[in-house]
Amino acid sequence: MGIRIAYGESGIDLELDRDSDATVLKSPQPVALAEPRDAILRALREPIAAAPLAQTAGELVRRRDEAGGLPVRVGIVVNDITRATPNEVILPVLVDELLRGGIDPESITIFNATGTHRDNTPEELETMLGEEIARRFPVVQNDCTNDDAYADLGTTPAGNRVRVLTRFLEQDIRIATGFIEPHFFAGYSGGGKAVVPGLAHLDTILFNHSPGHMDHVDATWGKTTGNPLWEDLAAAADLVGPLFLLNVTMNSDKEITGVFAGDRASAHAEGCREVARHAIVTVDAPADIVVTSNSGYPLDQNFYQAVKGMSAAARVVTEGGQIIIAAECRDGIPAHGLFATLLNGASSAEALLETLHRPEYRVRDAWQAHIFALIRSKARVTLVSRGLSVDDLPAGLCEQNRDLTSAVRAAVARVRSEGREPTVFVLPDGPLTIPTLAGSTPG
Image 1 (cartoon, rainbow, N blue to C red):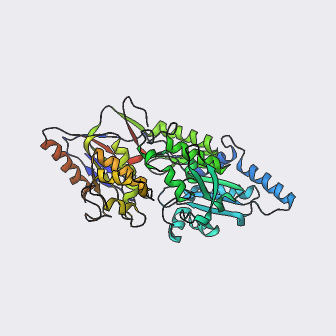
Image 2 (image 1 turned 60 degrees about the horizontal axis):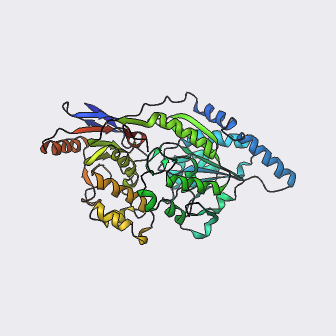
Image 3 (image 1 turned 180 degrees about the vertical axis):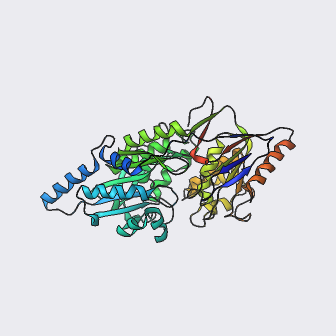
């Protein structure tokens, strides 16, 4: 029984023995749009709960010209290199529509929503944005520790002091792009996440990604209403002010399946409902072994991001079971940031959780370590990767195997040695599928 698993840019094969009781959990794939550029243009001209973008731009340009003011400035937020947003399709259509509305191309700036991630290199920016866009427009990347670069917008109901990149707030038209998919603690990606955490100060991000939010049962896949982390993000985005959204949905082949543009909250909510229709897969009981991926490149480029695939698997693994994740990790753990330091300083999941609940560990990347520790407290984790060696991760936190098939066979043999026949789930697309136990809600 051969199963193709998303891994890197090419995928890898898992060969299961015929007597293995394995169930493949794969979301029904929506059909790709035949003409995605036409769909994007239509969405910009017929947006959800908002005026057409070119009309909004044209009216603002006209008023500015009559007043003899400066040109209308436009800020376009994009995801960083860790996300597979099809910018090469989205951005040219978006820019053309802005120009049709009278926007001066010299007044358009791209904002790279790196959040707490590292800056992307010029080569990566060309890969992300397309060569023409990357070279035509200035790109501002989020440096979340530069105190002087942020403006204070107020406080959310939860008490989060919201500080967002001043240069973005200075733009007359603010546009957030991206794609909507299930997210392991925010419910769904897209929407206001482009701005907070994407363009937010570190302190704002740390509050939102705090242990209290990470521990909350409703801070999970497919849930926004009642999710304290998402609701704080949404409240922070409200403080930013008007934000025109252009989000897409995609299938496992990274083809565009839907376009959702217009008012940030309304367009995002409609997109989330569409993703939920396809992403949720229900099972009757958890499995002893869950094999997953991190949906391939670019999301599986490091171990930090691979926590997302583990989190999807953790929803349907038995207590004390085993998660096996295939992730290329070409970028390592990574070396930048504090995630590797936090992991390597812990001998066990319990020790890591204890550390992360201390006030002095409100630091960058703590949230990913927190989620990993919660997963590891429930199940064993085995990483299959060509990008990391056995010396890169503490053995007490994560086992490693270079070959996916042998890793699964070893896990099966372990359960059989206990006198039981194991059940096995396989999530070929990793976190693009939300596996859900029967009788429970998606979140």
